Length: 317
Image (tube, rainbow, N blue to C red; front, side, top):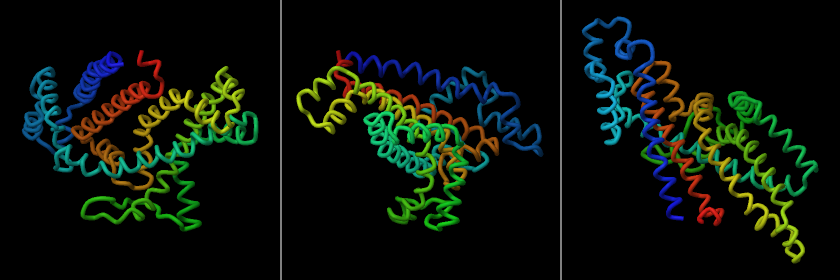
């Protein structure tokens, strides 16, 4: 068990190094001069040269990478010349909305998808199974922004039950309270969760239905164990590894969904910060956000791998 744990952790280190190198080189090797873009069209050659010195662009690329990595390890992701703030401060200011959106989406998707997929596997070929199949196709096919606009039209415009856009903080001096925070995020949660419910429910249905055909399920039923115990304690428990895997993949894929959803609902999170940085060509912010998202993706996959030790004791050996 300890050997597997150490092997998985050590395998992450070269991945993180490659991620940091790719993130660094994407902007350095892209066409155009980042200093000229930051300086603007009316800048003189002296202004561009000054920004190049400030960003360290006048040095060889290996030295630039070494300096950048040393700063990153100290928590310094650079400085946004467009917003006139450190990148770390900008990320800290926008972190809570994105974390709230992602956490609520994953929780809602799990609470709906796993029971739905389990019941569909239990009654395979029934009406619930057919509804789940159709819902999965729709969930994978319809873009996030289309789902968002449909929900806005129904719940915000027609029924007037929920607010359309914005974000109410849960913490800090401007905290609006748990209900106001939750009410503002219900529509974004529903928008993103609809896609991941389709994904997780489909995998849950396939994994549980396969487990229900195993010999140990017939043995459990022969012992007189109740059907609910067979379904939950035996079938679902043994199908946990692929379900957790797809949940981890879904969390990692939230990065793209968060960008679109925050734009649709005007949520001031990391997704909207990414869009603003791209539109304004704010290279330090883009670089910091891409690095943050990439590291998050790698660490989520590491946690998924480590969870196998708990879900399947055979992996320990």
